[in-house]
Image 1 (cartoon, rainbow, N blue to C red):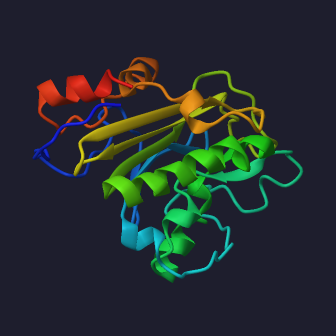
Image 2: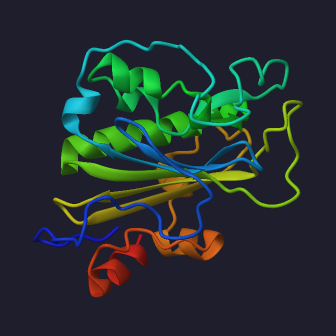
Length: 226
């Protein structure tokens, strides 16, 4: 990671990935790019604040089809698949009110994750992002499966990603973090730091341009440094 002593002023503050997107959907507190071929999000983007993670809203667990999608995935489509309905935007990031919490249980925000990953290392990465917000202030977070041709599918036709990544930019401290994991079980001894990569590595893997609103010279430094 790399630090700068002054806050950068970006040209905009949406920080949506720059690249092809078949269908962008805006919810109250996050945005995603939906791919009907894979029947899940190509990426999600949300802003995370201390207020959001300090709220008292409980999990709603109201998994449901998204009426913004034609032929949507339903809450029953993962049944018997052996995979968790893995949140991309975490429920624990959205504790300020019931609307934001409930929106995380739309099936467009789910991806088939190996249970040991979803409940293990992936949960640790999510928790580390919330800890970082407490330390460094608001974060812009991008979370995504790596979707490629020829992936296996669960019975309902949802693709099973081989891997996932999570990126975060903290404007107050000008810090970027990136994590990349395979969709598999990891040893309990593996920590988020062990799967940390650079944002540039994820860009090369996906073809997306992340955090492109930043001035080029700072974007280059931040994206190429662990």
